Amino acid sequence: MESIKTEYDQVDGNALLGICVAILQNQEKLYGPAFSRLAKKNTVEFEAEKVGQEPPEGCEAWEWSQVQEYLGKNFENYPYGFNALIYAMGKTEATLQGSTGTSQRIGTTAVAKQMEAGQTSGVSSLAEAWKQSLNKLAFFKILPPEISYSTVDEKTIMYEVKNCPFKDSCSAFNIEKIFKSDGKHICALGRITSSDAGQKVGTGCDYYVDKFANPNCVGRIVQIL
Image 1 (cartoon, rainbow, N blue to C red):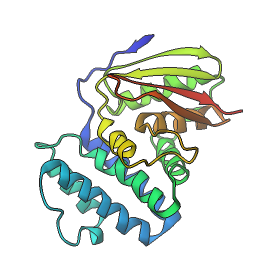
Image 2 (cartoon, rainbow, N blue to C red):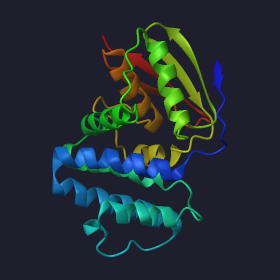
Image 3 (cartoon, rainbow, N blue to C red):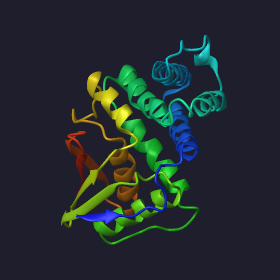
C-alpha cells in the first residue's frame, strides 16, 4: 500500500468543526427546523458525555455558531469534538428517516465542491479522483495523518487508517446500530472521500467498511457505474 505523508500530526479540529457544521446546515435545508433542533441536541449530548458534563439546557435552540463555540471550548478536554457533529449527522437522519446517507451525501458533496475554490476537478479515473481528494483534505489539514491505500482495480480503491480521529463517531454508530441506507457500516472518512471522488469522476462512488478498528480501519471506495 502507498502511504500518505502529511505535514501535520493531528487534524485541524477547528477546520473540521466548520466543515461539519456546513454539512449539517445543508442537511437542515432538506429536512427543515425539526432536523436542526434535534441535530444540535444530539451534538451537545454526545460532547457533554465525552467531557463528563451535563448538557446545557436549551441547547437545541442554539445557533450553530454557539454549538461550534461549545465544542471548541472543550478541545482541551476532548480534542475530537468534531465527532459530535459527525454523530449528529447520522443519528438525526436515522431518527427521522430510519437510516442515514442521503442527506449526508448531498450535504457532503456540496461542501466538497465549495472546498474546490471554484476550480474544475474533472478527472478520467477513480485513482486520480481519489488522490485529488486526499490532497485536498491534506491541504485543509483534515486528512488522518496515518492513511495508506492501494488501487485494487480501475473501479476500486482500498484504504487503511491507523488511529483514525473519526473513530468515536463511527463507534457510536456501531453501538447504536445506525447504518447507511444499504444496511452497511458507516465510515466518516469513506463518506467524504467517496462523495468528493464521485463528483470528480462523474459517475458517483460509494464506500464499504471491511474492518473497523481491528486495530486499524480498512475500507473500499467503489465507483458506481
